Image: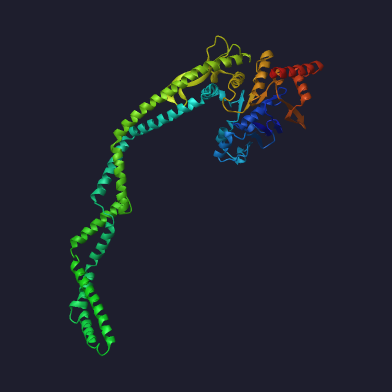
Length: 558
């Protein structure tokens, strides 16, 4: 609900702050007082075009600010949070237009672009009249209104679920067909990679083993010299270490009868001698196993080069290479089975298509019935709004392909005068006709588009008498569920309001300003009398005004 509107330096408005109430709020005033300027200011908050000429003469910028009260369970709060904006139960929108061209928009204190403003605010307010913010002129909203009137949210949700499943299958099938060339290229590439890795006959840990073997081959001479020389020095050569140790051990052993301690030393030497003999034996075996063949060294180098190339191409280690081989083998199996998958998708798509059309036809049947019913209700409402000869219809047009909204599009058609062919509403209806049609629709489908604040600008254009009374009554009843602001020149409409505001144009110090004042009971009667009798407000017109208000209350109370 719109609670506060603050306008500064906008056209002839210098500084205006007005608080609106729930229910039916009416705005009246003499021609040229500035009623349309207030509507223009609100329209600016709805994303309307910002023009430098709206800035008050002598000022550098104009601003319009509005506060909206949000219900506790409002989905709009979730919308704010999703947009990264604060939600404290209210919405503060401010738009500044500067002569420099640096226009700014703020929502709850955070700067936002114009597109985001339009997206957010479109769910809160609608203006019906001569302004561009007209949901009724967007045919895509017509089917939504019809569905809301008929209570088709649940069957529509079921249809959309089927449509989403159909789209997923269709997309997957299209991807298979459209990517056939890419699939073949991918298959060829993976096949080459698979064969290249398989031909290598990889073994885990092989690279480490080869690195060690290469190092040994590269240093074969040093290793041979060291091992053969060691064997000779320890065991096989003249005066080898083992032979000398053996002699010393024997001498000490012979002297143990003199000193037993020497016997223990002899045993230690003998033990170490056995260890040295084992080492000498290992050195001999090592030297005999050394491979001096240059051919083997080249084989090792070639094998390591192959492994380095594979790791550079596909994975950093042999273990990763083997894992990658498993992956591409699995993908090749999937790519090879594409025809089987395509046939499977075709069968699934055929089944889902049947389910989609079954759900869509059920929805279409309910829409057809509801379209006739809603059209008749709207025509009865229009008859009370000085459009008794108008013909209103909702045409459902089959689509060549199912859409997310069903098997058909829906659009409102209007023939305002007898003998004229009905035309799309968005193309031919005037602002006044649009306002009355929306009023009729709102009376028929109060929750139609979920918008809680409606602004009617000159909804009563071209009507009077009983039709004006009917318009006032209908807006008043609409105000029981929604917040309504209505600019009117007709006392018959104003008489039904819950809150009456008067737009006044004043001149101070050579400058013109506009104010908007909430009228109390007596001031309201005077304003109604002015609307009835013009500048000549006498006792009779005052009494007529009181009577008109009283009769309006009685009519609404019935």
